[in-house]
Image 1 (tube, helix red, strand yellow):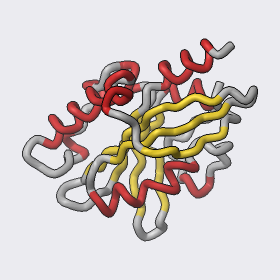
Image 2 (image 1 turned 90 degrees about the horizontal axis):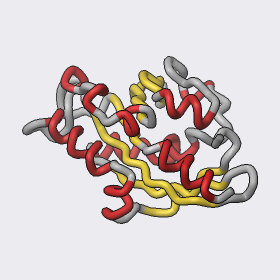
Image 3 (image 1 turned 30 degrees about the vertical axis):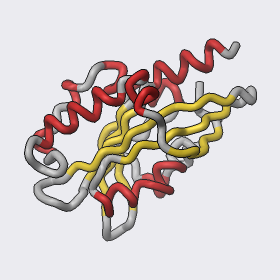
Image 4 (image 1 turned 180 degrees about the vertical axis):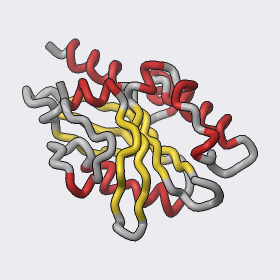
Length: 168
């Protein structure tokens, strides 16, 4: 489990790592939802279109500009299992998350401003001191125009957990 793991952003992942974790497929589906638009509208997003290994590691957070905060709209089942915390419906400012959302808080505003996908590589260190690298993609979504109102984060939690399991 990763509920007490330390997370550090170490830079963007390579295209090969994104492909290996299936995140290229997630971005392609996001682009299909967007069609000719810069980003998809929330009404066009179908989370069931994501492969199961990505859907379970997906979070969607509503950006609340007046509060400069995020409310978690969707927190995938694999995230619940891996981090042992359920965030659906929670405001991030009120969550004691053991570091789970620290990188999101520190970089999400860049997605809102740029209106472009964000590709990050996380170095996660388990309680036992095992350190592994995992890619994450953040995707902007709009309720109906050019303003980012939601951010979707996708990671392949199963690949992360397998990497830690192989470390013993």
